[in-house]
Every structure is written in structure tokens, then in C-alpha cells.
Length: 247
Image 1 (cartoon, rainbow, N blue to C red):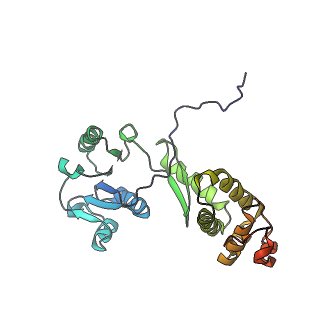
Image 2: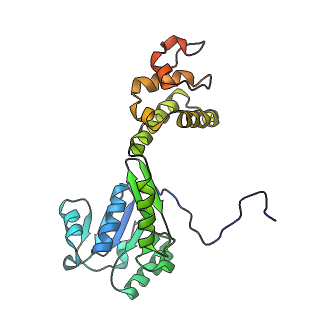
Image 3: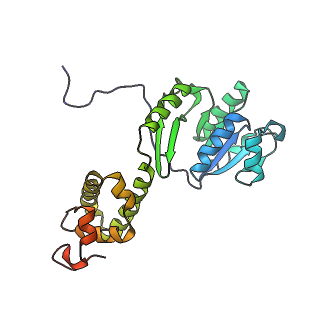
């Protein structure tokens, strides 16, 4: 008999948006796999150090170093490289060396990803679709990276072309709302009101919303209503509700 709550499906991963801005990430290796990892973590605004002999760098990694997008240590890995590091990614063709690095990371409680060795990974890299602030990741939990890429492309093909811009506008409105209603106890009401906005407005309307539109719309937050965008643009500042205008 099916229970009243969702069934537990073990064997998955906890998919998170890991904030690594200004965190120190060590990449061991400088080949094609390392290049892909570096792009991912630079996009997340991390501080990256690459440890690899110069003759082991591919063109893309060498370019990142030349452009000073990452720091470079021109030698093989040494245990002292882990000092002060928040995350480690290895991408070298030496299974024994990779396993040794993983063991050192476990001792130091540093999250690590050992390329192509799922049992020695604290986390996996999925296939990611990026459109501005929108990120969608598909993970196969290390079972089939190529298949994840195929699924990701199919999902991306079905998304509206302006979805990223709509997300960006919603983010701007949300920040403005927090200034209007900053108190912690306002949290549930803020979430409910923003949900109404997202459900009621089309993506085209969200994309076209100006900052003046947002400020006018925020006048309807206190009474908890969400007028149409046309009504917002026709609204006089003192007509949204009985009381002083909020902006």
C-alpha cells in the first residue's frame, strides 16, 4: 500500500547549488578534463590554483594561466598544496597518485572529486545548461556522463529563449522587495507574494518589466495583491492601496 508521503529512493545524490565564490579550489592536472573543470569553477567565482608541470598543460589551461585567470604551480602535486584549500579536483592519468590525493583530502576533510573514479568523489559534476542566472544540472550519479549531456540538451531545447532574462528580472524584484519588507517575520508573506507574481506574469511580461514597473508593483505588496502589468503601468502612486506609497 502506498503511503501518504513520497517514497524514499536511495542511491541518489543531494543536488545543491554550492556557493564557492572566493573559495580556494586546487586543480591537479592540466589536460582536457582539467580545462572543463576550471571553466565550471571560474564561472562560480572561485580562486583557482592549477598544479601541473608546464609540459602537461593543454592549450586552454595554458591560456587561462596566461590570462591570469588562475594561478599555476609548475610541478607535480605535493601534500603541502592542500594547505588552506576548500576543494580539490584531480584530473591526472595516474590512478595511484589520484588515490593518494583523495586519501589526504579525507584526512584533512577537504571535499574532493577524483576524475573518472566515482567511489573517490565527494561530489560529481553534472551536465549544466546556463542562461544568465539560470542553471540546470543533469546528473547520472557518475553512471553515464555522455547520457547526462544528451538529456541536458533535450531539456534546454524545450526552454523558452527568454527564460534567463525573466529569472534575472525576478531576482531584481526580489531584492527590491527585501528592502521594502526586510523583517524576518515577513519571510512567508514575501515568498507567497513573489510566487503570485511568477505564476500570474508571463515570461514576456517579466522580461519587459522596468525598474519603474517594479517599484510601482511593490506598492501592492502590503495588501498582498498582484495586478496585471497593464494595471501596474496605469496605476498612480497613491492609488495602489489606502496608505502611504511604499517606494
